[in-house]
Amino acid sequence: MPVDRRLELRPLLPPLIEAGLINGDIAQRLANLPTDPDRHPLECIAAEGPCLETLTQWLARHAGQPYLRIDPLKIEVAKVVPLMSYAFAQRHAILAVAVDAQTVTVASAQPYVTRWEAGLAQVLKRSIKRVVANPQDIARCIGEFYRLAKSVNGAEQKAVAPGQSDLLNLGASDQEPDANDAHIVNIVDWLLQYAFGQRASDIHVEPCREQGRVRFRIDGLLHDVYQFPPQVTMAVVSRLKSLGRMNVAEKRKPQDGRVKTKSPAGAEVELRLSTLPTAFGEKLVMRIFDPQVLLKDFDQLGVFRGEQQPWRAMNSQTSGIILVTGPTGSGKTSTLYTTLKQLASREVNLCTVEDPIEMVEPAFNQMQVQHSIDLTFARGIRALLRQDPDIIMIGEIRDQETAEMAIQAALTGHLVLSTLHTNDAPGAISRLQELGIAHYLIKATLLGVMAQRLVRLLCPDCKRVAGDAHEAIGCAQCRHSGYQGRAGVYEIMTVDEDLKALITPGADVQALRRTAIARGMCSLRMAGLQKVKAGLTTVAEVLRVTPGDSDTNPLSVGR
Image (cartoon, rainbow, N blue to C red):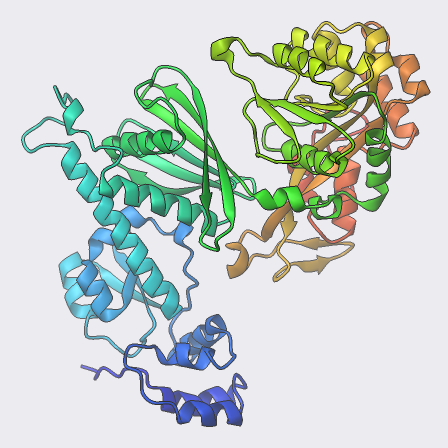
């Protein structure tokens, strides 16, 4: 049986010098350091400059074991945590990261320590596959995973009393975990902190028959994070509803709320909460708003310089309607708030009516729609018109009454900005007509339309040139997706005299598209291809998010 050998600082220095990761001066300083038994040797070396992740990769090669960068989103925490106790994991500084019927994959930063392997394999009745991982990641995940599992188990034990049937839990209303229970508080705190750390834009808490699940939306795609017992899921939703000042007792109808908190870095973060009654309980979605969005300019949002000029020209008008269109989650709010932030000054009265208020901004006068007291968009606009506004932002035009009030506001000398759910910019005209707005009113008031989508950006660490474009490769930094972060692609249509001539009853949208493109409009597909040429994204990503429903946005685009 091989003798265990823990890594020590001084024996590691010569091979690291040979590998070119440190020089002689650093090695000399490290050799004079006192021995710290509570600190991994690689952490001591990393303190002198080398990247800890690079050192870990070197150690894996040196020891002849596979390297693993721990991605918590790829670990099924509920499955791996029960495989060993917290005390065992902490004592040996090991973490189970994957499990199947035959094998358990265990991450360690001590590749030459083997005394725990035989006992663990015997207990689990599975073979052990070893990988080398960052010692800091292992320590952090051990703390987070086991603390979360303890809170979930504690909440579950409170929820189900011994001897009760899980199927029919009669009289168990007092047995459900309290929303203010310490375990539930810990779970919610972990959930929020984890979401901030993973750059999530949305948190989904979804009740199901057997297990409730939590998912994060990161860069536009949903990732499974954790599964909770049904009772715990309900308690987590109740806790979040309580934080959002929502009616905890009301579970039959949708509700909206908001929470303001701080990220681990200390920055203020605003959360918008929305609940929806489902067959198995309330589903809750939290949209995470970064206040830094308000500080972003158009360059940071992904608007090219050539696209900014027509957009600024529209916004410089004193009256008329400007529309931003796109599906949910396409960045309309960020575009509108960035625009309003630039328009807001001491010389103008800028008012908004929203449902709900997306981000609270002191420079605006913001009003929230409240259907419970019959304060609708239309009634809100009517009230705003008596407040001597210069610029009005309407959260969404979704019915005829709101559209008519927006038209009236524009006709009486106000600049109106709003959102509309359409596939592209020319489609906004037919949508307004479907809502019952007469063509001559659209001609008189509509200044322009911006349609937008969000495309994932290529990871700067692993993107590779492929012909005239770049391709997504995938690395540890981007979770092997090849993409990191998102930016907008924009289709900006200015309503000039040529387009106005085509706005007739039952206007031909295809004719509008062709004329707009002839007048200089860049379609969503073509705007996406410009980002491909700039090396920011891929053709596949552009084709995924942009519509291909017309001759101006063909289904297949050559490079």
